[in-house]
Image 1: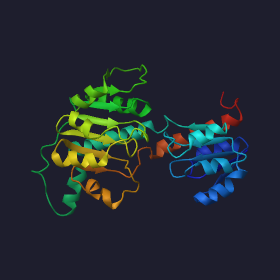
Image 2: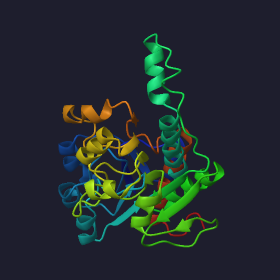
Image 3: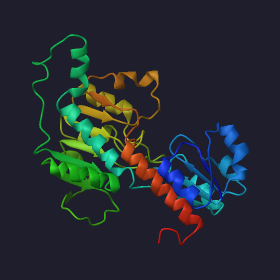
Image 4: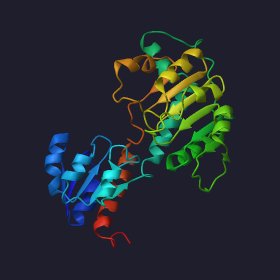
Amino acid sequence: MKILVTDGISPEGAKIMLDAGHDVDQVKYTPEELVANIGKYDAIIVRSATKVTKDVIEAGKNLKVIARGGIGLDNIDVEAAKAKNLLVLNTPGASAISVAELAVGHMFALSRFLHVSKMEMMAGKWPKKEYSKGIELFGKTLGVMGFGNIGKETARRALGLGMNVLAYDPPFTLMDFVVRITTREKLLAESDFITLHIPADKKGGPAIGRKEFDMMKKGVIIVNCARGGVVDEVALLEALESGKVGGVGLDVFANEPPTDAQKALLNHPRVSVSPHIGGSTIEGQERVGIEIAQKVVKAFDPEAFH
């Protein structure tokens, strides 16, 4: 089979497909070039950059498999794929540890002012007095909204730090350690930290907006390593300015890269940012590449990896 990889894959992942006898092309096409060339491929593997639109799917006359090396399927027209009976694959657990560690990293940065103290020290300042009122994560309550693979990995790390963990997720399943399962309203009201690990709801809009901020504790710290649009950024800036929100860690944004209109949020002294790198660790990318390659090979050969 002929497989197109548009956003790169780990060498181990490429080797798995080549060893299985498949032809693998690693090419970064423009959207127009992708529509023009997709017809010669049986499968396409993307990450977050390539958009597998309805036009791409319609042009893929030989396409059988669409695979996303990662968790969300935001960049794939899943409905159009289903209409053509195409198999859509992803790797929901491969980068969970990487994202969870980044979420906890933002909590540490905000709790001890790491994101701003370096900037001031680089400018020749010694802000010891200003940043001597940090807080410990130990004993604080972390609310985890979205208790899938990433939410669970974040909870494991929080418990190891001595935090109390509240979790909310409607399709909750049992797990091998104890957290307190609660309602969305109680999680918002009782948490000192809130970390979001839920998909964006294009129809329903942001999961966190003015109404939700009003329900939270004063000084709450929020971390979003999920998807841009999960938090209303205008309401978030207002909550930061009023002091309702004590700090924010953001790996994702409503527009990526952020526009000038988002600079007030990015440059806010109580905001810690990273450029959508949650799953982008060396280890995480290796796991993603291996898992998605194995899934694609298995799609063409059900007996593979048994």
